[in-house]
Image (cartoon, rainbow, N blue to C red):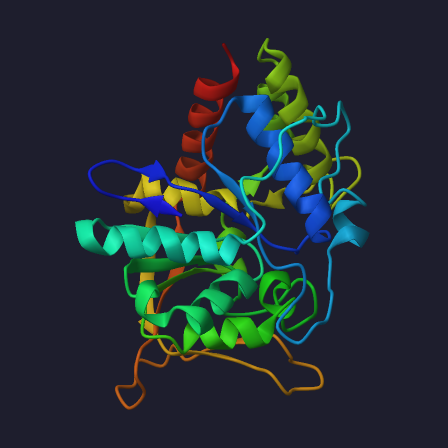
Length: 295
């Protein structure tokens, strides 16, 4: 959750089950906060999809949902600030309504928490200026041939979110595949002197080698591009379009059906990121990482 007025400010993080079960994703978030001295409150959100199914990416990302070829994230005694991430989100938004501050909801995992918030507090959710999603695709998927993981993990939740009246900005696989992490980038981070940089570089290295064990194939960057768009929106271009979520298809469940035909007959519910200046985005990422890690 990012408050955009007057400056970018992270108001809180609500963790959801996704790459791994909730107890693991929550532990990862708490370790990251402790390692980097971050101040944002962290809440435990939903541990299962709306339909009760459980889908993880552990076969790709490892048991912890974050592989590393170096040191693991240090353990921490920190605890979550609450066990009701959906309630915490709605409480914050109700407080924001009076101040009329611009609030952006960033969703870089399955959309279960957001859908639950819409079900439990649709009026409070109107305080959200925009929901920015890392998920979906205008073309092929990654978890299945048709579906991207975050949407496939809870397509019913995604359907609720995309059918809400809140403006949506979608960063799908199609644009993520234009922002490529290479071994050159990984080695640059490894050359920074701090202990934090070494931990981050180990995770980056393992992630970059998902496509090829020797690191020769570039790896698309996913979740971070949403934060990079907040910092430099001029590096991305968008197309407005209707987006529907496939719920019933035997081979296409979880697919984001993006109607890019520019026909006026159907209502538009999303701005879809179509193009990114990949080199400039990676340069910005390294600049921001170095500022945070190299000292």
